[in-house]
Length: 130
Image 1: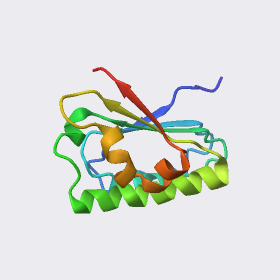
Image 2: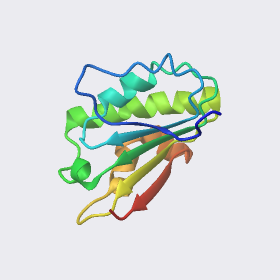
Image 3: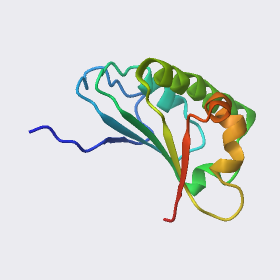
Image 4: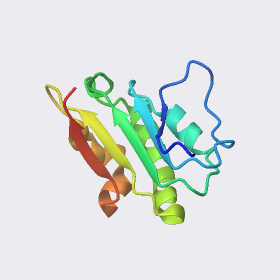
């Protein structure tokens, strides 16, 4: 029996994740508890599963509360380009869930953080209450 549960990853304490051996990976949830997402891009670059169907980035309010500094914004834009390639090569439409909180939320940041996905309408932004 194959477990259909998604693989949940949070920011690593080690340098990065290597997902190349997860060859039957179907669903991936990346927990973004910090503004920086370089680790997400690095982890996704190692994916070799042809079965991958779903990528979800789950961002909590603490990761967005201070906004995006220039360096963090570049990390999100690098991730944007990679996720567009996942759409092009595997038809994977990413989902970004974000915690509702006071102030700005991911809908405010998406046009600058994920410009290509947003422009093409290829990202689902979903809010949740913690």
